[in-house]
Image 1 (spheres, rainbow, N blue to C red):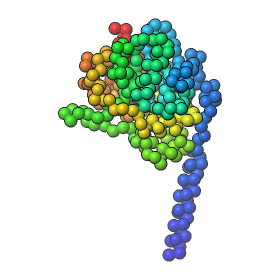
Image 2 (cartoon, helix red, strand yellow; image 1 turned 45 degrees about the vertical axis):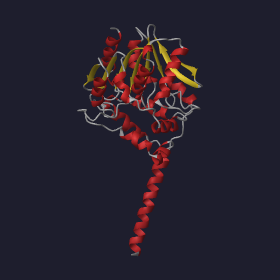
Image 3 (tube, rainbow, N blue to C red; image 1 turned 90 degrees about the vertical axis):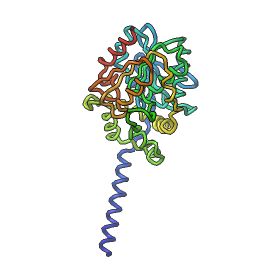
Image 4 (cartoon, rainbow, N blue to C red; image 1 turned 180 degrees about the vertical axis):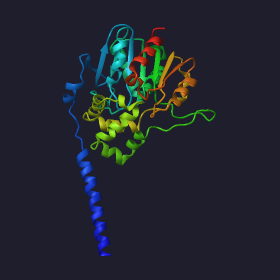
Length: 318
Protein backbone atom coordinates (compact mmCIF):
# COMPACT_ATOMS: atom_id res chain seq x y z
CA UNK A 1 0.00 0.00 0.00
CA UNK A 2 2.83 2.36 0.89
CA UNK A 3 4.48 1.57 -2.44
CA UNK A 4 1.28 2.39 -4.31
CA UNK A 5 0.90 5.68 -2.43
CA UNK A 6 4.51 6.52 -3.21
CA UNK A 7 4.06 5.94 -6.95
CA UNK A 8 0.77 7.83 -6.90
CA UNK A 9 2.57 10.77 -5.29
CA UNK A 10 5.25 10.64 -7.96
CA UNK A 11 2.55 10.59 -10.66
CA UNK A 12 0.80 13.64 -9.23
CA UNK A 13 4.12 15.46 -8.94
CA UNK A 14 4.97 14.68 -12.57
CA UNK A 15 1.58 15.98 -13.69
CA UNK A 16 2.04 19.24 -11.77
CA UNK A 17 5.60 19.70 -13.02
CA UNK A 18 4.45 19.04 -16.62
CA UNK A 19 1.66 21.59 -16.30
CA UNK A 20 4.02 24.12 -14.71
CA UNK A 21 6.61 23.68 -17.48
CA UNK A 22 3.93 23.94 -20.19
CA UNK A 23 2.59 27.17 -18.71
CA UNK A 24 6.05 28.61 -18.12
CA UNK A 25 7.24 27.74 -21.64
CA UNK A 26 4.09 29.11 -23.34
CA UNK A 27 3.72 32.30 -21.31
CA UNK A 28 3.71 35.21 -23.71
CA UNK A 29 3.89 38.81 -22.56
CA UNK A 30 2.07 41.53 -24.46
CA UNK A 31 4.08 43.18 -27.24
CA UNK A 32 4.20 47.00 -27.09
CA UNK A 33 2.52 48.61 -30.10
CA UNK A 34 5.66 50.63 -30.82
CA UNK A 35 7.61 47.44 -31.50
CA UNK A 36 4.88 46.12 -33.81
CA UNK A 37 4.64 49.40 -35.73
CA UNK A 38 8.22 48.91 -36.88
CA UNK A 39 7.16 45.72 -38.69
CA UNK A 40 3.51 46.22 -39.63
CA UNK A 41 2.97 49.96 -40.12
CA UNK A 42 3.13 50.12 -43.92
CA UNK A 43 4.07 53.10 -46.14
CA UNK A 44 0.35 53.70 -46.80
CA UNK A 45 -0.58 53.33 -43.13
CA UNK A 46 -2.04 56.13 -41.04
CA UNK A 47 -3.82 56.64 -37.74
CA UNK A 48 -7.12 58.49 -37.65
CA UNK A 49 -9.13 59.44 -34.56
CA UNK A 50 -12.71 58.15 -34.88
CA UNK A 51 -15.06 57.93 -31.88
CA UNK A 52 -12.08 58.25 -29.49
CA UNK A 53 -10.48 55.32 -31.31
CA UNK A 54 -6.98 55.66 -32.75
CA UNK A 55 -7.78 53.65 -35.86
CA UNK A 56 -5.01 52.12 -37.96
CA UNK A 57 -6.03 52.29 -41.61
CA UNK A 58 -4.56 52.03 -45.07
CA UNK A 59 -5.80 54.02 -48.05
CA UNK A 60 -4.56 53.24 -51.55
CA UNK A 61 -5.39 54.20 -55.12
CA UNK A 62 -7.87 56.60 -56.69
CA UNK A 63 -11.44 56.22 -57.86
CA UNK A 64 -14.68 55.05 -56.23
CA UNK A 65 -14.17 53.97 -52.62
CA UNK A 66 -14.35 50.39 -51.39
CA UNK A 67 -14.04 49.52 -47.71
CA UNK A 68 -12.37 46.17 -46.96
CA UNK A 69 -13.27 44.62 -43.61
CA UNK A 70 -11.17 41.83 -42.09
CA UNK A 71 -12.32 38.90 -39.94
CA UNK A 72 -11.63 37.59 -36.43
CA UNK A 73 -7.98 37.48 -35.31
CA UNK A 74 -6.95 39.23 -38.54
CA UNK A 75 -5.84 42.72 -39.59
CA UNK A 76 -5.93 44.98 -42.63
CA UNK A 77 -2.96 43.04 -44.06
CA UNK A 78 -5.33 40.20 -45.03
CA UNK A 79 -6.43 42.31 -48.03
CA UNK A 80 -2.94 42.93 -49.44
CA UNK A 81 -3.52 40.83 -52.57
CA UNK A 82 -6.86 42.48 -53.32
CA UNK A 83 -5.54 45.98 -52.64
CA UNK A 84 -2.76 45.53 -55.18
CA UNK A 85 -5.33 45.05 -57.95
CA UNK A 86 -8.33 47.03 -56.73
CA UNK A 87 -6.25 50.17 -56.11
CA UNK A 88 -5.65 50.44 -59.87
CA UNK A 89 -9.31 51.40 -60.36
CA UNK A 90 -10.65 52.14 -56.86
CA UNK A 91 -9.73 53.83 -53.62
CA UNK A 92 -9.26 50.95 -51.21
CA UNK A 93 -9.72 51.63 -47.51
CA UNK A 94 -8.83 48.89 -45.04
CA UNK A 95 -8.52 49.18 -41.30
CA UNK A 96 -7.62 47.27 -38.13
CA UNK A 97 -10.91 47.01 -36.28
CA UNK A 98 -10.83 47.76 -32.52
CA UNK A 99 -9.34 44.82 -30.63
CA UNK A 100 -7.29 43.83 -33.67
CA UNK A 101 -3.95 44.66 -35.26
CA UNK A 102 -2.26 47.95 -34.45
CA UNK A 103 -5.53 49.64 -33.46
CA UNK A 104 -5.77 47.50 -30.33
CA UNK A 105 -8.25 47.86 -27.46
CA UNK A 106 -10.45 50.89 -26.85
CA UNK A 107 -11.69 52.73 -23.76
CA UNK A 108 -15.33 51.93 -24.58
CA UNK A 109 -14.49 48.21 -24.95
CA UNK A 110 -17.20 47.80 -27.58
CA UNK A 111 -16.13 45.05 -29.97
CA UNK A 112 -19.51 44.13 -31.41
CA UNK A 113 -20.21 43.87 -35.12
CA UNK A 114 -22.89 46.55 -34.62
CA UNK A 115 -20.30 49.02 -33.34
CA UNK A 116 -17.85 48.07 -36.10
CA UNK A 117 -20.53 48.88 -38.69
CA UNK A 118 -21.20 52.26 -37.03
CA UNK A 119 -17.47 52.99 -36.82
CA UNK A 120 -16.95 52.41 -40.55
CA UNK A 121 -19.86 54.69 -41.43
CA UNK A 122 -18.28 57.33 -39.19
CA UNK A 123 -14.94 56.74 -40.89
CA UNK A 124 -16.59 57.26 -44.27
CA UNK A 125 -18.08 60.52 -42.97
CA UNK A 126 -14.67 61.64 -41.71
CA UNK A 127 -13.20 60.93 -45.15
CA UNK A 128 -16.18 62.72 -46.75
CA UNK A 129 -17.27 59.62 -48.67
CA UNK A 130 -21.02 59.48 -49.12
CA UNK A 131 -21.55 56.23 -51.04
CA UNK A 132 -19.17 53.34 -51.44
CA UNK A 133 -18.65 49.63 -52.04
CA UNK A 134 -17.95 47.27 -49.17
CA UNK A 135 -16.37 43.82 -48.89
CA UNK A 136 -15.99 41.76 -45.75
CA UNK A 137 -14.51 38.41 -44.81
CA UNK A 138 -15.78 36.20 -41.98
CA UNK A 139 -16.69 38.49 -39.06
CA UNK A 140 -16.03 41.39 -41.44
CA UNK A 141 -18.67 39.92 -43.73
CA UNK A 142 -21.11 40.09 -40.81
CA UNK A 143 -20.22 43.75 -40.37
CA UNK A 144 -20.64 44.36 -44.11
CA UNK A 145 -24.14 42.89 -44.42
CA UNK A 146 -25.24 44.75 -41.28
CA UNK A 147 -24.07 47.95 -42.96
CA UNK A 148 -26.25 47.09 -45.96
CA UNK A 149 -29.19 46.73 -43.59
CA UNK A 150 -28.53 49.89 -41.56
CA UNK A 151 -27.85 52.40 -44.36
CA UNK A 152 -28.62 50.69 -47.68
CA UNK A 153 -28.67 54.00 -49.57
CA UNK A 154 -24.93 54.40 -48.95
CA UNK A 155 -23.80 50.94 -50.06
CA UNK A 156 -23.40 50.62 -53.84
CA UNK A 157 -22.54 46.94 -53.88
CA UNK A 158 -21.80 44.29 -51.26
CA UNK A 159 -19.20 41.49 -51.40
CA UNK A 160 -19.40 38.73 -48.79
CA UNK A 161 -16.32 36.53 -48.52
CA UNK A 162 -16.99 33.47 -46.32
CA UNK A 163 -19.17 35.74 -44.23
CA UNK A 164 -20.25 35.03 -40.66
CA UNK A 165 -23.59 35.66 -39.03
CA UNK A 166 -25.96 33.14 -40.60
CA UNK A 167 -25.69 30.33 -38.05
CA UNK A 168 -29.36 29.53 -37.57
CA UNK A 169 -31.61 28.10 -40.27
CA UNK A 170 -35.36 27.91 -40.69
CA UNK A 171 -37.27 24.71 -39.93
CA UNK A 172 -38.18 24.19 -43.58
CA UNK A 173 -34.63 24.61 -44.88
CA UNK A 174 -32.91 21.72 -46.65
CA UNK A 175 -29.50 22.93 -45.45
CA UNK A 176 -27.99 21.19 -42.43
CA UNK A 177 -27.22 23.30 -39.32
CA UNK A 178 -23.59 23.95 -38.37
CA UNK A 179 -21.84 25.10 -35.20
CA UNK A 180 -19.40 27.93 -34.59
CA UNK A 181 -15.70 27.02 -34.92
CA UNK A 182 -14.38 25.11 -31.89
CA UNK A 183 -11.76 27.76 -31.09
CA UNK A 184 -14.55 30.32 -30.50
CA UNK A 185 -16.37 27.98 -28.13
CA UNK A 186 -13.13 27.16 -26.32
CA UNK A 187 -12.11 30.78 -25.77
CA UNK A 188 -15.62 31.62 -24.59
CA UNK A 189 -15.02 29.37 -21.57
CA UNK A 190 -14.18 31.62 -18.59
CA UNK A 191 -11.27 29.53 -17.30
CA UNK A 192 -9.70 28.93 -20.71
CA UNK A 193 -10.25 32.53 -21.70
CA UNK A 194 -8.55 33.90 -18.61
CA UNK A 195 -5.51 31.65 -19.13
CA UNK A 196 -5.31 32.53 -22.85
CA UNK A 197 -4.66 36.19 -22.06
CA UNK A 198 -1.19 35.15 -20.85
CA UNK A 199 -0.67 31.63 -22.21
CA UNK A 200 -0.85 31.62 -26.00
CA UNK A 201 1.03 28.61 -27.38
CA UNK A 202 2.47 29.30 -30.82
CA UNK A 203 1.99 25.71 -31.99
CA UNK A 204 -1.75 25.83 -31.23
CA UNK A 205 -2.11 29.21 -32.90
CA UNK A 206 -0.24 27.94 -35.96
CA UNK A 207 -2.40 24.83 -36.15
CA UNK A 208 -5.61 26.86 -35.99
CA UNK A 209 -4.43 29.30 -38.65
CA UNK A 210 -3.40 26.47 -40.98
CA UNK A 211 -6.89 25.04 -40.47
CA UNK A 212 -8.27 28.24 -41.99
CA UNK A 213 -6.61 27.46 -45.33
CA UNK A 214 -7.85 24.86 -47.78
CA UNK A 215 -4.20 24.05 -48.47
CA UNK A 216 -2.27 24.54 -45.24
CA UNK A 217 1.04 24.76 -47.13
CA UNK A 218 -0.13 28.18 -48.34
CA UNK A 219 -0.07 29.50 -44.77
CA UNK A 220 3.41 31.00 -45.00
CA UNK A 221 5.57 31.32 -41.90
CA UNK A 222 5.65 35.13 -42.15
CA UNK A 223 1.84 35.21 -42.35
CA UNK A 224 1.50 33.03 -39.25
CA UNK A 225 4.05 35.19 -37.44
CA UNK A 226 2.14 38.37 -38.33
CA UNK A 227 -1.19 36.98 -37.10
CA UNK A 228 0.47 35.74 -33.91
CA UNK A 229 2.41 38.88 -33.07
CA UNK A 230 -0.54 41.19 -33.71
CA UNK A 231 -2.67 39.00 -31.44
CA UNK A 232 -0.02 39.63 -28.75
CA UNK A 233 -0.31 43.41 -29.19
CA UNK A 234 -0.96 44.79 -25.72
CA UNK A 235 -4.65 44.48 -24.92
CA UNK A 236 -5.74 42.48 -27.98
CA UNK A 237 -6.14 39.16 -26.19
CA UNK A 238 -8.42 40.65 -23.54
CA UNK A 239 -10.38 42.47 -26.25
CA UNK A 240 -10.81 39.21 -28.16
CA UNK A 241 -12.41 37.53 -25.14
CA UNK A 242 -14.81 40.44 -24.68
CA UNK A 243 -15.73 40.27 -28.37
CA UNK A 244 -16.37 36.53 -28.32
CA UNK A 245 -18.68 36.92 -25.32
CA UNK A 246 -20.67 39.70 -26.96
CA UNK A 247 -20.41 39.79 -30.73
CA UNK A 248 -23.49 41.96 -31.29
CA UNK A 249 -27.16 41.74 -32.15
CA UNK A 250 -28.46 38.71 -34.02
CA UNK A 251 -29.98 40.21 -37.17
CA UNK A 252 -29.87 37.16 -39.42
CA UNK A 253 -33.65 37.10 -39.71
CA UNK A 254 -33.29 40.42 -41.55
CA UNK A 255 -30.84 39.14 -44.17
CA UNK A 256 -33.64 38.55 -46.74
CA UNK A 257 -34.34 42.30 -46.57
CA UNK A 258 -30.94 43.12 -48.08
CA UNK A 259 -31.58 44.65 -51.51
CA UNK A 260 -28.03 45.80 -52.25
CA UNK A 261 -26.47 44.05 -55.27
CA UNK A 262 -24.50 41.25 -53.61
CA UNK A 263 -21.67 38.95 -54.64
CA UNK A 264 -21.00 35.93 -52.42
CA UNK A 265 -17.52 34.38 -52.61
CA UNK A 266 -16.70 31.20 -50.70
CA UNK A 267 -13.97 28.62 -50.29
CA UNK A 268 -15.34 25.11 -50.76
CA UNK A 269 -12.86 23.80 -48.19
CA UNK A 270 -13.81 26.33 -45.51
CA UNK A 271 -13.57 24.45 -42.20
CA UNK A 272 -14.61 27.43 -40.07
CA UNK A 273 -17.80 28.47 -41.85
CA UNK A 274 -18.76 25.61 -44.17
CA UNK A 275 -19.83 26.26 -47.74
CA UNK A 276 -23.44 25.47 -46.77
CA UNK A 277 -23.54 29.01 -45.36
CA UNK A 278 -22.81 30.39 -48.82
CA UNK A 279 -25.97 28.75 -50.09
CA UNK A 280 -27.94 30.17 -47.15
CA UNK A 281 -26.88 33.71 -48.07
CA UNK A 282 -27.54 33.02 -51.74
CA UNK A 283 -31.05 31.75 -51.00
CA UNK A 284 -31.82 34.62 -48.62
CA UNK A 285 -30.51 37.61 -50.63
CA UNK A 286 -32.59 38.16 -53.72
CA UNK A 287 -30.66 38.31 -57.02
CA UNK A 288 -27.33 37.65 -55.29
CA UNK A 289 -24.54 35.85 -57.13
CA UNK A 290 -22.50 32.99 -55.76
CA UNK A 291 -19.00 31.89 -56.75
CA UNK A 292 -17.30 28.98 -54.98
CA UNK A 293 -13.56 28.39 -55.15
CA UNK A 294 -12.97 24.64 -55.09
CA UNK A 295 -9.50 24.66 -53.56
CA UNK A 296 -9.77 27.56 -51.11
CA UNK A 297 -10.62 27.60 -47.42
CA UNK A 298 -11.90 30.39 -45.17
CA UNK A 299 -9.78 33.25 -46.59
CA UNK A 300 -9.89 33.12 -50.42
CA UNK A 301 -8.51 36.67 -50.63
CA UNK A 302 -5.30 35.34 -49.03
CA UNK A 303 -5.21 31.84 -50.44
CA UNK A 304 -6.35 32.55 -54.01
CA UNK A 305 -5.96 36.34 -54.26
CA UNK A 306 -5.78 36.56 -58.06
CA UNK A 307 -8.82 34.38 -58.74
CA UNK A 308 -10.96 35.95 -56.02
CA UNK A 309 -10.08 39.58 -56.81
CA UNK A 310 -10.77 38.93 -60.50
CA UNK A 311 -14.31 37.88 -59.55
CA UNK A 312 -14.68 40.95 -57.33
CA UNK A 313 -13.43 43.34 -60.01
CA UNK A 314 -15.77 41.89 -62.63
CA UNK A 315 -18.72 42.43 -60.27
CA UNK A 316 -17.68 45.94 -59.21
CA UNK A 317 -17.14 47.19 -62.76
CA UNK A 318 -20.53 46.10 -64.07
